[in-house]
Image 1 (cartoon, rainbow, N blue to C red):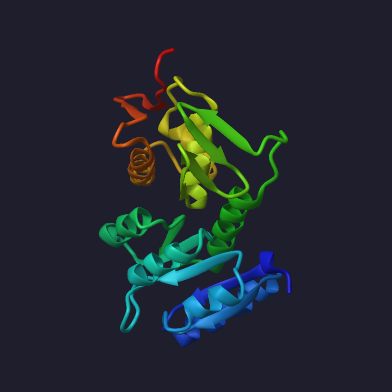
Image 2: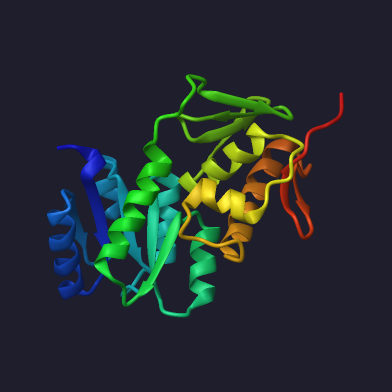
Length: 232
């Protein structure tokens, strides 16, 4: 089976799962349905899907707890389903490594658009043949979707990887929120989408973990963000 077309859908609403699975099937995807997170870890060991669609409000273990366990196993793109207007859950999901979110109720066509967007970010071929970007002592590995320094390595989510790729490709250059969002998530997001700050915060935590606490992603107030490197 083509794993680039497999979707894991974790939601306790049977009718919603069937509706989404049918719609995704019409778009060429194969959906594996899960009513909760009990079997997700084992399923991930058996095969890695293209995307996981994960509801936050689940009986027993919450979607956020499941996301934590998923991130211990895999960097597979995750789209969280959240209650409409629940910013706290949305931000928590992004902080834990989710790549995107979609509030309920949603249009299945928008879900497909977001699936395709995260697939483009995680699978799109690069124009150049270089598998690594180096800046400030950090090495971004494109195929492994990780960043390393001094022999230590941490995994990145698809969105974190694209953001760091943009920043490290232009060290010392200020990139606006709009530029970063367009690069990492597509043009459906405007310059005032604050989720960019959550992803940058996650990237700072991971890069500071590798650099012994030194901050290399600098906020330029009113302008955007910059990957800062030491002067020679």
